[in-house]
Every structure is written in structure tokens, then in C-alpha cells.
View (spheres, rainbow, N blue to C red):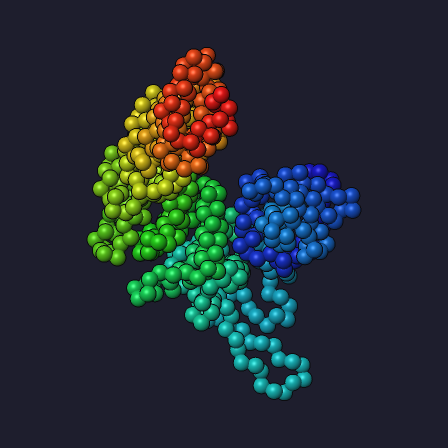
Length: 565
């Protein structure tokens, strides 16, 4: 360990206190993810020993300056400026370099409680530590006070590690509710969500990392329920609506949960006791997903992340597990009836069938329900991503060919990720190129942007020009740089494109049209010169001027452009 990075016990305690005071739970969780992803770069301790500088990679690089003696005055170049995700990640990287436990920093409030009196109750606190509801402790009476002792106060529920290991997650949520009480669960903003999440995290002791991951996920799910369910209940009467600040908070919570699920679950060989809690988590998310409104997609996204991450191949998942989950999903159709949210139900089955290599069944299911469910690229992207990461290019080709026609009705930019998958397949499997062209042509006109990009990428200038002419495109609407590759590789293809546009300009019979015609004719002159067909150009321009001799304004524009002598 670098001797420059040392923290004595007093400095470490002060750092824990500072983190507990300055950072909310959401920021700490996100900061831990950034630290784990290696986003903290160029960290250095200044000569004074109390200032740390770092650069943290996000959507761009952010400079962070941390004052270890007063975290409140630390700064970051991001919009939050203080107590942000980048600063939290920097502190965790610094603690790691100092050989201090990162989990303690990520759980600063509980770490401080555990450090107090060796985990015993604080001296004179008047409260007993408890893990169950209904336990009470008497408040201490003041010395010399003859008044009756104060009425006992209920201790707010907490958990022990043994309870979290043994109790089903449904009991976790019951205790969450008992901790706050129904009157304190009207959550509408990110600040309220952060306060609730912090309070829930204070219920647990320092835990093994896998159990801490599960607990944090369920704390996030509990807060999400408190925000989503009221809107879901109003749906039957007035239609689903989430206020602006509520929507921002929901998006933030969901993003944190997905980030947590993307980090590998730290199940060790001796942590099989957690497996039941993990399966109960899948049950919880399945029920929430299948009964939420399709416009939310909140729990559907988290269900997919769970099966892509913690329960995916290589992370504990297996064929028997996927078969069992598939049976549970299929049974839900009869159990829920009209209340079933069909889009996530269909997509969940497709993912499991994909894992089981039953591709034909999955694609048949999509083909049956896809048109009714208004399937989008974002819906099938997780399925395609599984195959891309596994480098199973032939399977991915077949999925793209089958699902592409189901994605019609959306703007070209919405199909851009779909086009990227095709590009990846053809790069690895050149013989898939004909299938790509067939599929993109079938999807026209919706696939036009993707189709054009593919034509340009593969230098198919003849098809590209044909497409522009069929669509009635104006050559003047393209930047010169966009047409330069065609001029370089196949300049003769531009001749009919330009000629067609000139005739269209003239038919407008106004000054603007004539000016545009003259400008494009000057490009044509250069193009004929480049092709060394000067004589053919001269014949054309003479015939053109003669044919339009009665259009005096056009003749004037031709002379201004030096096209007529």
C-alpha cells in the first residue's frame, strides 16, 4: 500500500461522519457503482494531506476537489457541484487506497452505529437495539426528579443479519411499512424518496455484500412502490399521470436499481442461504411487472435487469430455473385475466425462451402479439443484446430478420439501434448482408434512415441514388460533404439525380426555382468536366436554354451564373 495514502482511526471516523452528514443514500449507491466501474481516474493527494483531486468519467470527464476536513466545501465540475455522485466515487477510491473497507463508507450511518461502544447500545441512550416490532424501552428519568417516568416509546423496527437471511422478502417489506407507518408514505419528490431510502438503510447492520445488495434493491423497490402505486390506483378513474417531480424521482430510483442489478451479485459458495431471497425477489418483480400499467414500464425494466444480470447465464441461472419461471409466467395469464399487462408478459417469456435456445417459439410469440402491442426497438433490445454479447451472430441475424417487420410505424431515429445490430452482424458474418438488405427493404418507408445509413456504410451508391430519386429528394438539401463520396466513387450516378432536380426547379416557374436550377446546373457543368464529357454538356445546356427560351427570368439566372454566353 502507498504510504502516502494512510488514514488513522480518528481521521477514518471523521470521514464516515462527513459522508453520513453530506450524502444521501441514492448518491452513495450511485457513487459506489461508479467506483466499482473504475470511473475514478488520476486521483492524487495534495501535499497538505487534506485535499484530494480526481477526474471521474461520466457522460464526460469531471474534475473533483475533495476537502477531507470539510466535505461540505468540496467541489465538482458537474451541475450538482457539491455532494454529488462523482465526489462519492472519489471518496470510495481514496478509502480503498488507504486500505479502509469500502462497504463501511457506502454504509456510513450504520458503520458509525456499529463503531459506537463496540456495537453495544450507546451509553445513556435510553433505547434498546431490537430487530422486531413492538419492543419498547423506557426513557431514563432525570436524577432528583420525583415525577413519574416518561411513557415508554416504541422502538422503530430494525433488522439483524440472521433475520434478513431467514425472513422472506415479503416480511422485509412489512417491516419497512411498520418502520414508517402509513401516514408517512406519501412520496412525491426525489428529496422525499431519498429521505425514505436513508431511513430504510438505517434499519440494517453492516452485512455481507451479497445480502447488502439484496437489501438495497428491496429498499429501492419499496420506495418505488410508494410512488407508483398511487398513480396506478388513479388509473381506473382518471388515467395514469405522474407529476413532473415524481416522474424525475421514479426515473432516478429505477436507474439506481438497474445499476445495482448490472453489478454482479456477490454470492459466495457459502451464501446459498440467500438464494431463496433471490427467487422471492424474482417473484416480487414478476407480480409487480404483470400488474403495472404499460405506460409505466418501471418494474418491467427491473424484472428484465434481474434476469439479464443476477439470474442470467453465468450468474447463477440454469435451465431448470428458466423452465420454472416460464411456467409461472404462463400460469399468470389465467390468474390475472384482463388485468395482465401483456407486453412485459410476452417479452419476459421471450427472454427465457431465448436462454433455453427455443428461438422459434419466442419469435412466434412475438409475431402473434407484436402488432397488437406496438413493439418498439427498446422492447427487443435486451433480447438482441444477449445474442450480441454472446457473439452468436447467426442467431442474431435470424432474430433481426424476423423481428424487423414488427417494428414498423416508428420514426427512423427510433430504429437506429436496430440498424446498429445489423451492422455488427454483417461485420462478423458477411454472408448475412443479403438478409439485411431484404429486411430493411421490407420495412420501408419506416426503415429509410437505417437503410440509407447502411447503403452509405457499404458504398451502395447506385441504390442510394435510386432511393433519393424515388423519394423526390432535393440535391440542394444535402451538405456538400454528404455527396462528396459519391462524386469520388461513382460521379456518373449523380447525373440523373441532378438533371431530375433541375427540371423540377424549372417547373416551379418562380424566381427561387430558377435560381436553384442555375446553381445546380453549375454543379452539373463541373461534374461533366470531371467525367471529361464537355461536348455532351455543351449539347445539353444549348438544348436546355433553347427549350426554355421563353422563360426570361430563367435565362437571366443562366447568364448571371455564366452558363450562357
